[in-house]
Length: 231
Ligand code: NAI
Image 1 (cartoon, protein in one colour):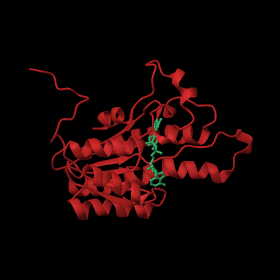
Image 2 (cartoon, rainbow, N blue to C red):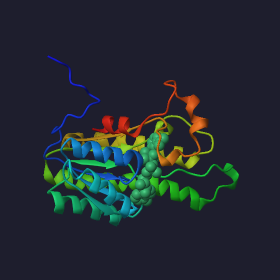
Image 3 (cartoon, rainbow, N blue to C red):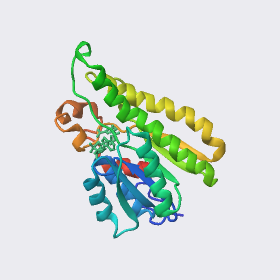
């Protein structure tokens, strides 16, 4: 028997599944949307920027079902509505990808404002709590299990000079994920986090030269490589 190509699309592997990808309008999130739709999942593309969410949904529609939706993931009620949209539009929720996130300006720690700190923690960590909570509520009620995938980072494992809030948020995602995974295992809901190294997307514009030497491969990662892992 030929071993399946794990990086390649297993078309129809996700047939009948419903997914949400937050931050799906750009970079890694957009690559995840393309992959999940190609694999058969009906997907809600959620982004703060509705136009980019709709552009990605329009682009993938020739391969399957997708629609864009506007939501600010720092707003719990907006996240709840996005989950409700997946249920009303596509009939349920099987895969929740909490991917939306932002970077942070490099400033000395003693000059950082609380407002800037809270913005990164809200966007990169509290948002994941909201996504896990509302996905879990629907998945538990459905009783057919599910998968919740939270986008951490290599900076959820190690530190990075100049990014204390981002690093704290990404470490926080790992702890949140591990605790909720234990809680939801009995419901057959897998809760996992993904920790990519630096991936060539708009998020790291201007950082490429600094971070390239940190990668033993001699190159940065590509968004479709993260998408393959998530799939
Ligand atoms: P990106 O900047 O290309 O895409 C992020 C998307 O999230 C954008 O479409 C943006 O509009 C959306 N977004 C931002 N704030 C939002 C909010 N409050 N509500 C809803 N949507 C919002 O960034 P990229 O690189 O694709 O990052 C995606 C995730 O991957 C982030 O969580 C990031 O921290 C993580 N990551 C990125 C790495 C990289 O090197 N690019 C490495 C490891 C993790």
